[in-house]
Length: 117
Image (cartoon, rainbow, N blue to C red; front, side, top):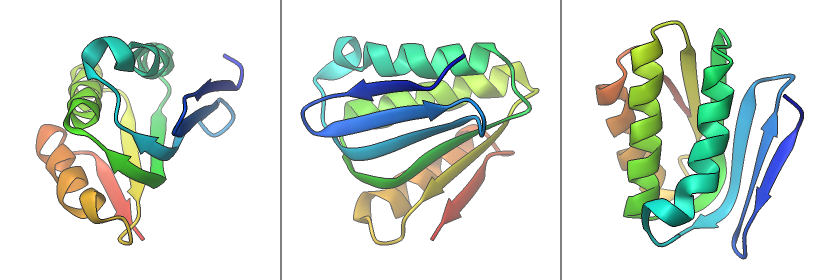
């Protein structure tokens, strides 16, 4: 799988196959599941390769609405079902929504590694 990018008016998402990292930048406030489908498809495609680890880099994601949090939660649950992928989520203590919301992902996947910097 090659480097892939998704761009919207307020966001930029890039997948780097070398590091198996999906990086999110900007603000994600899309309208529901249908608008998040391209992002879900990208995440599912990465997970379908069953790499030993996947990193979600959210450090530069300044805003994520409830539909986006739902999308991330469903992805974490899908990774949990595979049982072979270690998931690392990196975030920033400087982005208010991340401290509270990202900690909830650990409840969905106890082996998830969360790094807030």
